[in-house]
Each structure stands twice: as C-alpha cells, then as structure tokens.
Amino acid sequence: MTPVPDFVLALRDKVGHDPLWLPGVTAVVRRADQLLLVRRADNGHWTPITGIPDPGEEPAAAAVREALEETGVRIRVDRLAATGVHGEVVHANGDRATYLDLTFACTWLEGEAHVADDESSDVRWWPLSALPPMSDIMTARIDAATSGETAARFVAPAGAVGVEPPPVLAPPAPVLGVDACPGGWVGVVIDPDRRASVFVAPEIAGLVELVRERHDVSVVAVDIPIGLPDTGGRRADAEARRALVGKASSVFSTPVRAAVEAATYEEARAANLAATGGRTSVSAQAYALSEKVLQVDAWVRGRPGARVIEVHPELSFARMTGAPVLERKKDAAGVRARREALAAHGIVAPAWFRGAGFGEDDLLDACAVAWTAVRHALGVSESFPEVPEVFSDGIPAAIWA
Image (cartoon, rainbow, N blue to C red; front, side, top):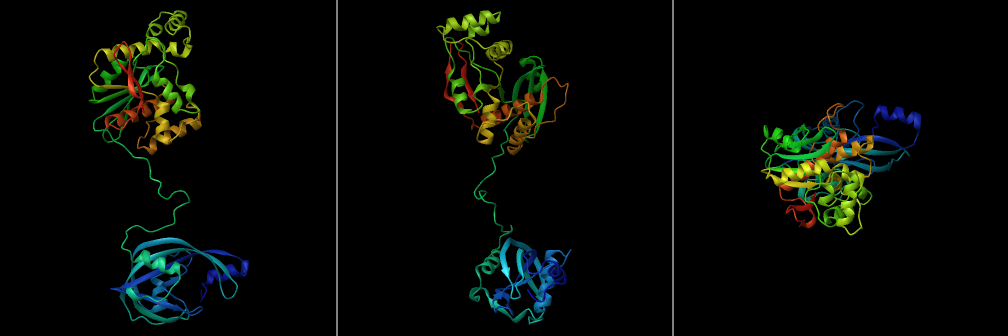
C-alpha cells in the first residue's frame, strides 16, 4: 500500500523485504443503493477503501480516517462486518506482508467523493446492482458489509463448523442427586434456575426430609443399586459396563438380596454362591455398601413420594462428554475433567472444603447424578436396560443416564 505508514517504513529498515504481519481495515461505504469504490493506483483494481491503522489507533477510527484521506468524505462506522486473513501480498517493491483485515459496514455522511491522495487513480459511486469486477476477497467483504447481518463473519477453526454446544437443561421443578459418602449421604439439588445446593445427612430418609424443608423435589436419583436380584446378576450392571469402555470396573455386580441381607461377609459370599449355582461370589466393595443398599431399599419400599431412580455417575459423565471420562475421579485431572463436563451442561459444582463429611469426588458424583435427574424430569433420560427388570421385590431395576 502507498504511501506506506511511517511505522512500517521503520520496520522495513530492520527486516527488509521479509514478511510482516500487519493489521488492516476495509471501509465498505454505502449511500442508499450505491457503494463507494476506489481504483488503486498501483494495480488498477477497484476496491472498497482500505488502509493500515496507526500504532494504538482504534480500527474503526482508522476506517473513518482512511475514508477522509483517500476520498474526502466523512463516514459513520455502523458495525464490524467481517474478520479475515488476507493471504501474503508481494508488493511492487518486493515487500511481503500478510494482513489481518477488519471489514466495517459504513454509511456516507457528507462530502463530495474525489481522489484525495496518490493511492487511487479514480473514486466513484457504483450501483450495488452493477459493481465492477473485483477479486473474490473484496467481493466477500462487500457481501458481508451489505448483508444486514448483525454478527461479524469470521473463519471458524477447522473442525468447529457445525459443532453445537451441549444442551443446557433446567428441570421443571427441583430435583435431587444423591451419592454415598463417609458422612452418610451427600445430595445436590438442581432447581429450575439451575442453581446447585448441597445437603448432607447420615441417613437417606433424613437427607430427603432435610431437602424438603426448602425444595419440593420431583425426582430423587441415587447412586446405589435399587431393585435387588434373587438368583443372578442384573442386566442393568452388565449394560452399564458395556457402555463404559475403559471404566467398566467402576460398575460392581449387585449381590442377590440374600447376600445383601447377610450378617457377615462370609455369609454373604455363601448366599450369593448358593443363589447363583456357584457361579458368582460377592466382592468386598459390594458387600461394604450393603448397609446403604438396605437403607435405600427400605426407603423406596416406604413410598417416598417422589420418582426415585438409580444412576451411576460414571455413566452420566460419559453421556455428558460423549465418552467415558478415563481420568481417576480422585486425581486433580479427573476432578478438572468432571467439573468441566458439568459446567458445559450448565451445572456449576459448588465449592468443596475438607471436613464437610464428603469428598470432592462424592460432591461431583452427586452433581452428575442430579444432571441425570434433570434429564429424567424432562423425559429425555436413557434406561439401561431399555425395559427395567423386576425381581421378587417388585422394584424396577435399571440404571438411568
């Protein structure tokens, strides 16, 4: 571009003809159904008004200045129409530069358009319906500025076109997600404004009563087996494992009812082996949860006055992110990945502090369970299996996500 700004000349003294990365502005100036174009003196091409902002100069102010210096007219800048990178230009003197262009949609205010400097050989108003031949780049800038769109056009990063953010869901009424923790149970309520609040209690029934002092919850989702088998495994556990490739071990096999009700681990192992024809014993982890399983079992049988579903948080996180979250939930990377997954779905997990009676992983699991409770309240949750099993206790057995 000529004349070349002083700061560019100073740079050229240091780098010669080497490539420079420079800012640029394009002013697409409109007067009714006409467009103001200049004919460049260096190559004879018709273009909108273009120029380089001075150091520290606002781009819109540069567009106004360039219009006055090149054509003698005063303009109003209406909006940013487009951003884009103009590929490398090799000027007549050998200088090489690439430009980051900001194209502005502008309106003529006053002044008779004329050639006002030596950058142009002609200045003319052209009907929008009969513009002269121009490069594809300039045509695209004019199209953006005259489109009437309110948002600026830009080139999206590779792979980002057509990618939509995950839906942010809000329940029609408060819902509760519950996870077992060292202090008993930690619950997270999500209300219709997507605000999250935390409750802790030693017993499941007491937790729900505490929550109901402030919230009339419509769905209670719990990370604990609901619906105990009589003679074998549950399809819910098997299907959840298949969906959690790389994290299948996070879903333990639910013991039969007789094993859960056994007084000792040894008795539980014997009861499970007897009920499954010697095929399956009971893991220590599964038996350690027996007391909490029986708590929820008794509470569900007592007609709790809300829809109650079983949820596995790792399955919920997998549905949020599109794949199982492989980072360990107690590690810093795992905590970060789970908080980010929740945030992407509009759930800001409450702050955690030591001594709260639950771990940070318990809190995030309860948030994930609450997310599935929101989906269930809206009728968009998934059941594993699709049709819940029903055993002798009459309680539908399925893991929801």
